[in-house]
Image 1 (tube, rainbow, N blue to C red):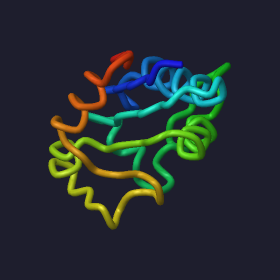
Image 2 (cartoon, rainbow, N blue to C red; image 1 turned 90 degrees about the horizontal axis):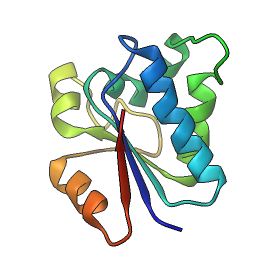
Image 3 (cartoon, rainbow, N blue to C red; image 1 turned 45 degrees about the horizontal axis):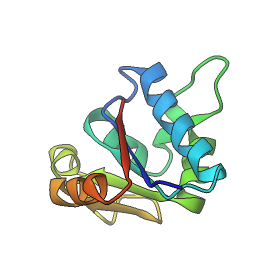
Length: 119
């Protein structure tokens, strides 16, 4: 199975797009894929404890549940620059969430057989 790299730039400003990214990531984890979910822009806030509870979307799995599923079987990364602009440090993020930059995103996206999606 190919690796799946998913980037979401959407947060509370675009709840449907954000939830779609998390849903695809959690579904791919459940299917056994190697998943890397990148939180950029306003989505960076969802790497901080409690923030995923703020996104409520009718007829959708709660974002906090989706995030937990991805953390259990995949990787979750907050963009370095996005974190810095929001004052988010490594001490602020959930256990299992890392902060990394574009070089790591490009490396994961260009790995043999990887598929990248952006929401």
